[in-house]
Length: 450
Image (cartoon, rainbow, N blue to C red):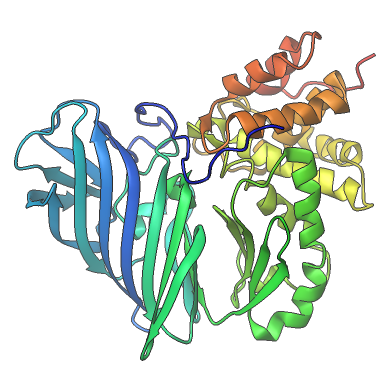
């Protein structure tokens, strides 16, 4: 029997990271964060946030000064390092901290930041991302660089850490954050919700959802599945999300054990352009819950991200196909599993569409302006289909399960996947990687290997 990782003793990704060329202003050098503890107070009507962030970290070089990412829409009141109040400056999205005494290499740091303000999304070349007000509540949509809109952090996908999130807000509202709800206490008009996310999490996946929701228990089986739904959409939800639990079971069989303690589907009372994934839950707009199965592919896509993106996370943004290509292919796998079009039919359908696309960059490095373009999702999925046709179903799904097991709670690169795939076949795969990952031009549609 294979030993499962102990969720209380997460395996952290390795040493330190470099700044990402796609987002060179995000992330920080000189230290490694091992835990975030966020104590937040949020008032819905005024969109007012007061926070205390306690950040535990270890230096990997001598530090006379270090920085954290934090949007300047929030005002910093005080910073302490190892119990001593210190000097700081806050401009251009960076909180610069000068400890009273230099931190030696390997030195432990406990950094406490008190801050407050009206959180709002940060502007980026991908639109506005981060904390966003709804008509009656709020949500967080951080990908790729919106986390600093509501807490100070090392905003780099490789900088995974466990989180403790404690948030107090108006009592009529249901509040969801990452991980397991460990306590809920109501005092007069306010309720404090406490969540522990013990499995390491990238900052862009940290999220809080606040709204007037009914909580539904869809399954209390091996993987507890819950939902938060506005009461007015209850009947529509019963149809649109009817197969959510079966989908969890199917993906667990295909991809290996579900990586977190539970899964929650949130449906906001507002319409959303696209659904959002966060670690241990996904958020959909009311327009995705319309009493039909028309948006089921999106439900599959966001669920698949729990394995591909949230547990196994790209170490650099150029490898985003490891998230989106895998989640897109999962849509096609679910379609076939549930009696719809086969994965091969979907691959052919989107290949025809891609033939009308002019590719200027390779899938393995699409560039920051294109990394969320639809072609990255579809070409990434067809790349997996080409691999599946080459090595066969048995080895392909064994590879996926090994991928999610070996790199559970860790960060990865395209090279990691290429290396692992080579151990599942004696058939050469170099042409697949050359043609589909590293050459901009679209190769011929893949065929079953003889």
